[in-house]
Image 1: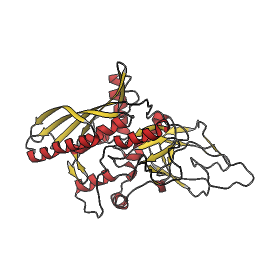
Image 2 (image 1 turned 180 degrees about the vertical axis):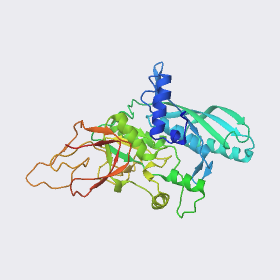
Image 3 (image 1 turned 45 degrees about the vertical axis):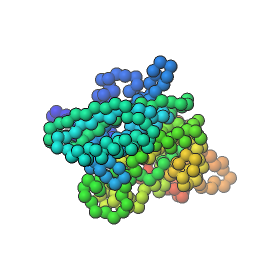
Length: 366
């Protein structure tokens, strides 16, 4: 039977990853593609620049908290910022369906301008195509961005290190839940609003305060936080375990997900970032860091556990061990296998954090 493209190939999950790796990366054969980052970092003479492109086909095109215009600006700006670059220039390409209302197009164009001004970038070139009615779904937008580096940074999905913290800059699944409810016409109570926003200003503040401690930045868009953590685990060749009870989800979003049988861990975000970093804040702290704007203490990342009680907990063990040394380790674990499944794991001890959500590489403790 002939293989065909399915919606799963565009969902940001395993099928998307396999399509990109096995077809595009393999055929294009470019060294810049091999890391499979959201943004390429290239040399142009003596200068280093960041380069990325993204396409937007969201339905509905207008939604609480934004529209396809602002989304197109924010998505490309954020991809540049996730490598530590300062976004500078954008192109905008549009594919418009015949019969699309001019007033809606004008609204989107003004939104593009507002989004660019807010992010501090300039739209410098573009392209427009109109296709016959029924050949496109209202309007598709592509944005390509260029960013420059004003400091030496090495931020990459491959740079996660044992002992790093995982920090999420806010609540999960706000955008995905908003789009789903609006698209399906669901009447669910709650202030559903997309989190679409530019992250470059937050990243600039983070780098000014903690440049040497930030190893990885990624915006968890398609596939959500869970898929992004899987990708980072594979790229950095580490294991990531997060505490389910610490995942920040708004109550109405959690309620909508439970009603629809969805996991907020895998719904899209458009204005949040994940950071793998050193001691950027107290690992037990909570709340928003006034300097960087980071939501502290949401998630935790550590490759290790307690030698004494041999728990599967990655981090500090809270149990007392009278007369025995209490320590953590971060040595390589040979018995590890990649797994995209999301499942709850019961700890082998009765620690205060006995239930975990495993993401990325699952470890067997010997």
